[in-house]
Image (tube, rainbow, N blue to C red):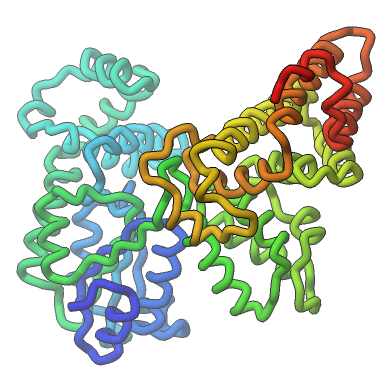
Length: 450
C-alpha cells in the first residue's frame, strides 16, 4: 500500500485503501490530509452522521473500540477519528497526560481527568498491583515533585479514581496492545479508523507494524538545524497558496513573509489568508501590504530595520524605527539587534575578504551559494544557510573599516540611551543617520582599521 497522501487517496477511491490509518507530523498538514481523506470516504453532507470524533487525550480505548464495533444504522460506511491519539507518543511526552488530568479536573470533567491519570500511570509503567497498593498522599506528593505540579490536586484526582473504581491497564501501554490486536484482526466491513498525532515513537512495535501494513502517513515538515521550517519548504508552500488564490507577489514582499514566519505552518497559512483578503481584487501582493497586516512571528522586524540599514535607506530606516518605538519596543533592545547585525556583517565581511574570496561573486544565486560553499567552512554568522546568504549579500555593500567604525557609533548610542539627559528616540535616530551616511572617517578610533 502507498504511504503518501496522493497514493492513499487513489487507493481509497478504488476501494483498496487501508481501513486503519495513522497521520502524524505538522498539525496543519495532518488536518488538511485528514479532511481530504474524509471527503473521499464520506461526502461532506454525510459526515455529521457517519463520522465520530474522539479526543484521545481524555477518552478511553473502550469508547473508541465500542464505536468501531457498533455498525451505523444510517449508512454503510462508518468512520471513527481519534484526535491527539496517545498510543504512539514518545516516552518524554507522558508527563503531558498528568497536566491534562489536572486541566480536565479544573474544567469539571472528572471522569476524563481520572482516565487521563490512569493513562499517565500506565505510561509510567505502573502495574495494577502497584495502583491498588499505593497510598495516594505519599504517591501524589512524589508525582507532583517529579513533574512540577500541585500535589493536593493530584491527590484529589487520585482519590476520585479510587472512589469510582477505575482500573489501571487501560492507559497508553494497555491501549497500544489492544490497538495492535485490532490491526491484526481488522475492523468490521465498511468501518475506518483514522488516528491523528503530533509525534510518534518510531521505535515502538505498534508503529513498525502499522508502517509495514502501509497504514502510516508521515506529514512532518523539514526543519533546518536551528529548528525553523526550511526556507525551501516555506517558499513552496507560499507559492502553492498564492496559486490557489490567483495572486502574484513582489520578490521583496516574499522575502519579508519568509523572514517573519515562525515555527508553525498553521500560523503561516492564517497570515497568508489574511493577506489575500486584505489585498482584495488586487492581483499583486506588495511589500507595503506585508508590512501592514502580516504579523511578525519570528522577530522579522530585525530584518526590516537591518535591511534598510544595509541599503543605506535612511528614510525607510527612520520609518521602521518610528513604527517599532510606537509599538512599544525598547530602544536598548533595538540597539542590541543592530549590534548583533553589525557583528554578523563583520563576520561575513571577513569571510568575503578571506575564505570566500575565490568563491563569492556579486549576484550569486542561493542555489549556487549552496553548491560552492565549502563544507568545512567555519565562522559563518548563523546556523541558517539562507540567513547566512542574505547576510553575505548585505556585507558586500560595506568595507571592513566601515563596519568596525559602526561599533564605535553603537557604543556612543548606548551611552546616550543610558544617560538620563538624553531622549531615546533622538539617540536612535542619530545612530541610524550616522550609519546610513557611511561616514567612517570622522571617528578617531576607526582610522587605524583597514
